[in-house]
Image 1 (cartoon, rainbow, N blue to C red):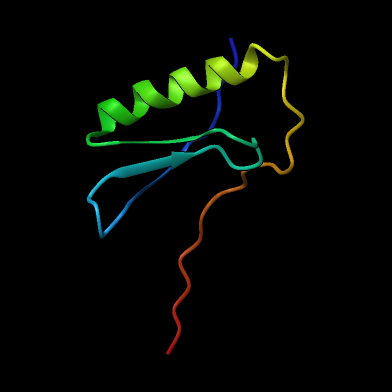
Image 2 (image 1 turned 30 degrees about the vertical axis):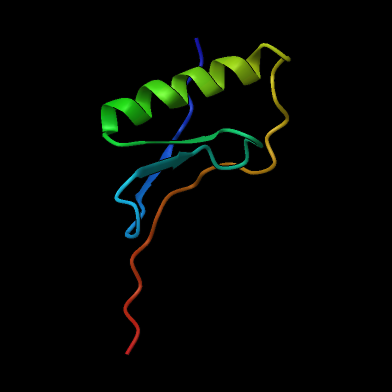
Length: 69
């Protein structure tokens, strides 16, 4: 079993949660709740893996907060 880091944001216009896996082409989805997003992301990743292990375009490192005046 593999683990994938999902970046989650909330769209201010629709209120939907939007998720994507950095560097994994096509691995993105949305949902009205975090639970729905998790289910949708699981389905998308499982579907993409049916075609074989993806070649990741990048690796998630983390987030950082910057202060700008």
